[in-house]
Structures are given as structure tokens and as C-alpha cells.
Amino acid sequence: TYPGFPCKPSSLVVSDDFFFAAHASGASTDNPNGAGVTPGNVEAFPGLNTLGLSINRVDLAPGGVNPLHTHPRSAELVHVEAGEMLVGFVSTEGRFYSKVVRAGESFVIPRGMMHFQYNVGAGAARAMTVFNSQLPGVVLAAQSLFGAEPEIPDAVLAKSFQVDADTIKLLKSKFRKG
Image 1 (spheres, one colour):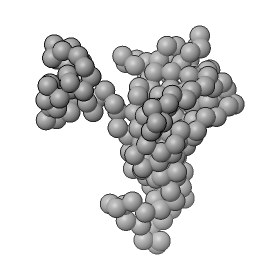
Image 2 (cartoon, one colour):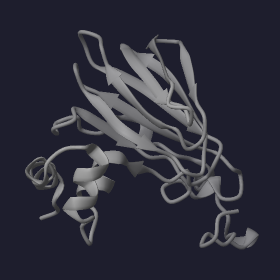
Image 3 (cartoon, rainbow, N blue to C red):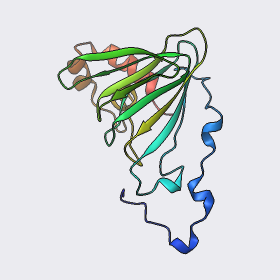
Image 4 (cartoon, rainbow, N blue to C red):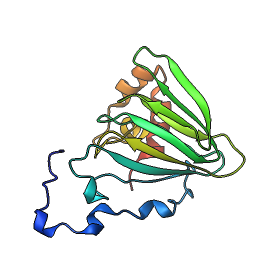
């Protein structure tokens, strides 16, 4: 189980607890990344509680990207249903592994690795991403670094990325809330 998700009394369990229809249609890709993710974790799909699995739908417009991110509590299997995506991750040794994955093909990403999906096809692309956790968590790289609240000091980011403070200010301006 995952803390914070108590089991429902069996007398209150109904068939709809085990049914999930949100993946029947995609999320909007009308955003700067050209990506929409429809989560199917225990928060959205209560029947997953204690089962140690979840599933998301990822929709990408042509040229769209599900930006660099990690799942701290889960490995991920990307199964492309339509289109073609470049799927890749960076290992703890700093090695980049990637493959263009087409409809009917799958690619696995080990737990906690920084990864992405990028639509390299001419049309829309869709994948189902399967996790071995009911709540895999997500840490978006750019948002976490440049949109953190409170802010990470500019000097720390500038030194970490070996760029000047003005570059960091520009990046932060893209990820500020509100």
C-alpha cells in the first residue's frame, strides 16, 4: 500500500471502483510542450489501491514532447499505440539509451531514471505508460529546478549549469507560477 490510501470497507466496494474510463479520450496537447497526460493512478482510479500498478495515457502532437522527468517510486513501460516516439533515458552512469518506438512496440525505463517521450512522426502519437506502483510520482526536471517554491538560488543553478545568472533568470521566467 501507499501511505494515505486506506482500504475501503468491503461492504462499500462496488463494481465501479474497478472501472476506469478516463483513457478513452486523450488530454489536450494545446500547450507549449504539445503533450497531454491522463493519469491512471490510485488517486484517479481507486481500484488500484494496494495492487502496485498504474497506467497513464500520453498524447503527443506532432513535435510534442513529454518533457524530461523521473518517477521516483516506479519503473515505466512505454507502449506506443499510435504514431512514433523517440523514447529515451539517462542511466546513473550518464549513458543515454533511446529508441524510436512505433505503434505496437514497447520500451522500458528503469525506476528513477530521467527520461522523455518525443513525437518524431508526422501525425499525433499516443502511448500507454504502465508503472509498477499505484502512485509512481513525477518530478519534472525543468519545472523542479527553475520553478521551485521557494526558488533555488540563482548562484547555485548558474554554477551547476555553468551559465551566467541572466540565463538562469530567463529560464526561471518560463516556469514561474501565476
